[in-house]
Length: 76
Length: 368
Image (cartoon, rainbow over all chains, first blue to last red; front, side):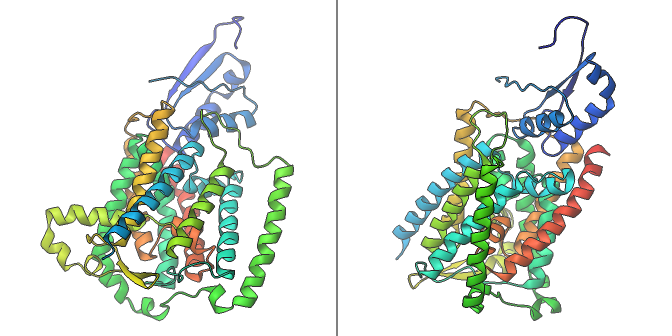
């Protein structure tokens, strides 16, 4: 998705084990903290969650804020 | 004499549970979340699904009652108390927001391996046991004696309330069709095997129709947690359990085809063990099988400490509220309100207030 025009820093947000609405609140916090670099594309935020509903709520909120979102299911 | 009959109840409710567990899990139909997100994120998207479930159930119940196709209305029986009902509602609403799920939500997520909800479940059982200790005192408080008994609006004023209900159903069905034309029913969600929540709402309404048509009672499950607690406590301190009024005496008597079934939260293997127990097992197994099928079952990590405490306290508050009001949100919102019970309406008002309070407190717990 991201092309290699510059080195992108990946922010890893591990919220495994957390549930609603903590997942969304924590993710929104991270989005706000790094808003500038995320918007300019120098950073990417990777949210790792095992809470099923978060794969609906977090993308929905982020899209509303104008971010591009991708959801991946990782086995195991 | 009815032993064989009781097993058929178990299979009936177990079957309902399997179906309900499947749709709840796949659509993540979380009533606590739906109500909380209204206050927390001003997100009304999923409120429609809950409204659909309640209105469809109202339509089904009105049809059954108008054409007299049901056994006696067993819902109005038992301890209905307006003060305990509304205060119970507030505690329940606050509890479910702190816990992150109502009683159904807790069951289907436990079955997916989510340990937070195992904590909530322990909280619900602990809260039920705490209620058993408080029961004599709560029932003796003077204010609770004054407003005793349920008022069923439909039974009290059949013509007026019946007429209003039909008009209301008609208007809302038109609104639902309008939303359909606007494409507002479809939820965009990433999980594989996702079932749209509107379908879950329809399934919940049909399941409640079947339950009510057969037993004169809408679906309920929270008393079963008290029973589980009672069985645990009997193993540890049997003499103490034998002394507790709440566990000794049935809460009320269900009448089906002139057979009487006393039911309650005590350790007895009564009618509820088969109906609520069957439903609980069905939901757990249904959700578990779906999680396996979708390759999503795993014991997910232990929550951070503050969230774990919130889950435990929330579970206990839910149980206290549900026992005070003689039923949880499933029984009152999906069953009692469509049956037009005043007690249930008060419970739901309390629950909304409680959920609002919860939404004010919760971010402070999570984000510090």
